[in-house]
Image (tube, rainbow, N blue to C red; front, side):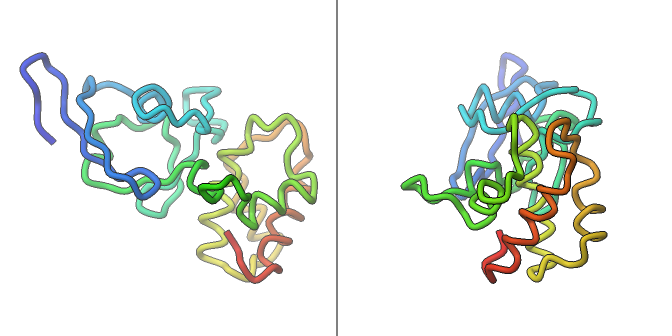
Length: 165
């Protein structure tokens, strides 16, 4: 990370397997960097206080709230956003397909954060784990539409395909 003459900081980060280098304000939120600077608008922003979890992404494989981090904090790291899940031709990942098939999404606002949280859980527990473990994994993402049961069923279905995330 290096500072430029105009007070911006150069950030080098790998996002969804692609390397990026951008000059950003030191106080720019990671969520804004992803959406505005990289044009990856799948990451949603709601509360901007870290309460709702809809902005969740993976940072070096771990779920983080992108609204609570600065873009400069990811310099030299790898992040994954919801755009990383589908194949380049648009084919849904098994996890996305399970959410579609089992009504794990309704309005869709929490879905990107929920998917990334579920991906981390399935990466750690390819068999899905228990329903209680799934509930615990997704507890930090607020969903106002589904009642969570369909989300749990979706994650369980993705795990039982043997493909996980």
